[in-house]
Length: 317
Image 1 (cartoon, rainbow, N blue to C red):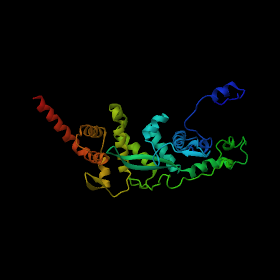
Image 2: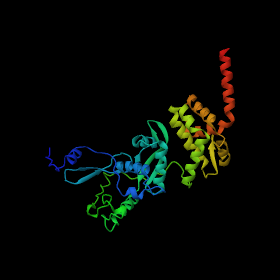
Image 3: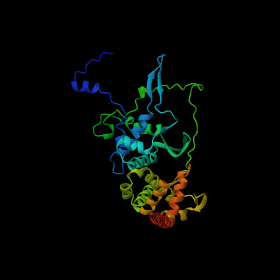
């Protein structure tokens, strides 16, 4: 074990013995990732710091004395759900989701949406996140361009720890093809349409208010995941630019589908949750099932509960 020579300051020595780990926040981000008010966008900064942490390589030295970088995740991109990030960062689901929207809008991250089969089960809309190094480098360049990093009148230049140090440039040796991981061009399984982000956020808020989301969550705390899926699906449909969408295997005019979705209320969603809970069939495309059930809810809910009441009355007799 190596001998450590004291710094001469007991507090510094005590801190030096602590094993800090996790994400780091460069000072430059506090000045470059901001809200419209000019204040730091802390939620976006926290989320980006967590993403970058996973992309910072683990460092080791091989037998030849060469520094080896290894990634911390095993797939092509980092897979993290919004819920995972929310729990890790002690933020709400919506705070993380909106932070990702803002980061993507700034070009700091790219989201990859995939459909995957795990243990024979199909999972849709699996989120993978990738930071954009060129954009991150631009954020750091704010510090590089400071004429005097100690200029106390320039808040961006007060600290140089966010700088990209030109003296630390490294030569990266790419492994030979035999040992290298294959790079693949992966297409998203979800069609991406050009929709204004502010419109998406506003539509989501309106729909949550329309169905009284907060009351639903209080009544069904264990159904939060399903409620979130319903809100996101409805938002996607209500902001869609496509001319039509498949409902129960049949193409329907998108405006007609939107009209049906605008009639959904708290009782409609309770009905849909009940349908999901009562479903006993085999494997099903949950997205298609939800679209069809939500589409039919405004016109089938009364009949459904009338049949349920009649069934209970017959059972009682």
